Each structure stands twice: as structure tokens, then as C-alpha cells.
Length: 181
Image 1 (tube, rainbow, N blue to C red):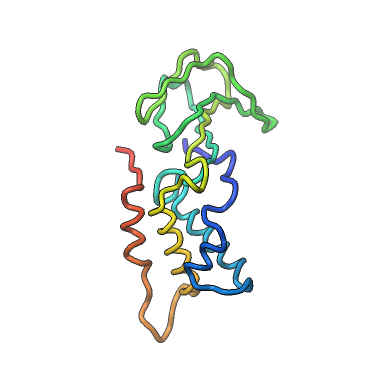
Image 2: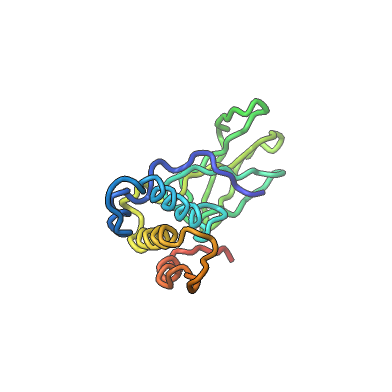
């Protein structure tokens, strides 16, 4: 089963003034558009289906536990603060007590998982705690992509050569891409 997001990150990765300086935008007329492109750039990179295969800013995820697994692979490389929670038929979440969770690399194992219960999930937090902790190369990649989209607003350009994403973007994110083997 695929993990799903329970609590989204709070706030943007980059401050609006920082982005506007990079893009060379003055005034407040384009603020909404710049912020939207920054959110889209982070979303392209972030989370389970993002290019990075990891979380950018702190967020909470749930991984459904099917059957009675002894262990599961973690959805992200920097998972922490594990809990077993049960999603009730009402949609409410409750903590499941007395389950030991032990991490070993990209896996966690369970002791005393209540196998007869339905709706069990492994929940965890992933991502950098604050925007200040995010690697500068990742921030610069988001700046570059935001600027690229701001300057190339149409899906197709006519009368000029197509514009690819800046080459530096791929080089900046490459060391941060996580691939499970």
C-alpha cells in the first residue's frame, strides 16, 4: 500500500522577497503567481511521488499495515517519531499502545502488533524541521525552477526555441534524490 499524507508542511520553503529578488520582480503585482510557482516547484520534488523520493519540510505520513507484517520498508529515508495508529470507521485516529517499533536502516520491525485489529497504520514524520535546515542546493533548485516557470508561463511557445528546465536544476537535486534498492 502507498503511504498518504496526514499533516502537510507548514509555510513555504522560500520567502517571497527571496524569490522576487532571484526572479528580478519588483512590486507586489506578481506575488500570487510567484508564490504559486514556488509551491508547485516544491510539490514536484516533495513527498512519496515527488522527484526526490523524500520530504522537503516536516510532514506526517501514514503507511497502511496490511495483514500482520513483522517489518515494513520505510517510505522515506529520514523517517522518525514512529507510532502505530488506528483509523476508525468514523475517520478518527487513535494511538495503539504497547507496540515496540525498531528501526534498522530503511525498515522498521514490530513487536506485539495487534494483528486482529483493522485500520492499523505506521505513522511517522519526515523532512527537515524548518526551512533554515534545508540544504542550500535544494533551495537554489527551487529558485531556479520557480524563475523558469515564471519566465516561461505557457506550455508551448511559438516563434522561439523551446526552453528546457535549467541544466543546473538537475545537478543540484541529484545528490538528494533517494532511490530504494
